[in-house]
Length: 343
Image 1 (tube, one colour):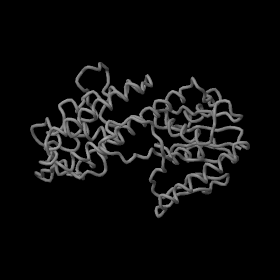
Image 2 (image 1 turned 90 degrees about the vertical axis):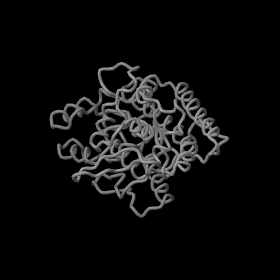
Image 3 (image 1 turned 135 degrees about the horizontal axis):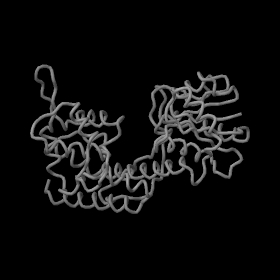
Image 4 (image 1 turned 30 degrees about the horizontal axis):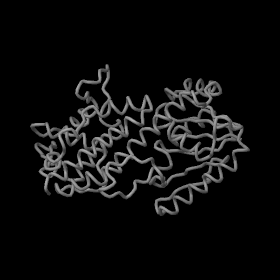
């Protein structure tokens, strides 16, 4: 038997259509960001700045979908829309228990994910749950896919045994970078849930969900725009963001990923941070009064135009100490600044 770890159902479907997945293969899906996420702790102002290691995880919130397909292609484990948090947790616990029990039966685990941090990070998350190591009896082989045409798929499939997951592999490097990113986001979100939630309430913004690192950047970037701009211009601005110029590169790091930028914009709208102006059926956006009030109460160094570049640098080096120092500096300074505002 084999186990295929697939990031997306679509990729598994393509592999099947090209007769690459054999009938002895079970398929488990990670859905890009993984099956679990860190639980943000309930903090008090005395806990800020907070940089303790993540302690708890919980299932991701998913729409109805199959998580594991059996040898017959039918679902063995699935999550429904009506499932409660406790039910989702039980389903994933049962999934892990089942796969652990199968580890002695698998002769190969095939990793079919996008060749990036997110894909390999989600695969590693599952492998860790299964207590797999490179010394385990079953090898993990990676499909480093750059395209999904028939020739690329066949070549990647044929070469997979040459791409074993081990401590020095590309897969492990990308997975470690994703773990570092998830840790930075955990620290940011934990501190934001206290510091920026208070500031949101003072300013008249909706405080929940918490303000992410790139939503904060978007608000600060728009604060410098003298007139409203369209949604497409906002997305283009995020895509082509070059920061202060300190980090020299032939390409732009961008604010957020291509998949997340629209969601960041929508969240800012739903929070009440943006106002919309309509002319000739065309919408343009600028900071609302509440959005301006929020930005005006930020310490002048809280907005970091180079944050995407710093993060990329930290991840490439696995520099947890630098990430921790940054979080402690930014949020420690901001909470002291808020205490001096006199609200």
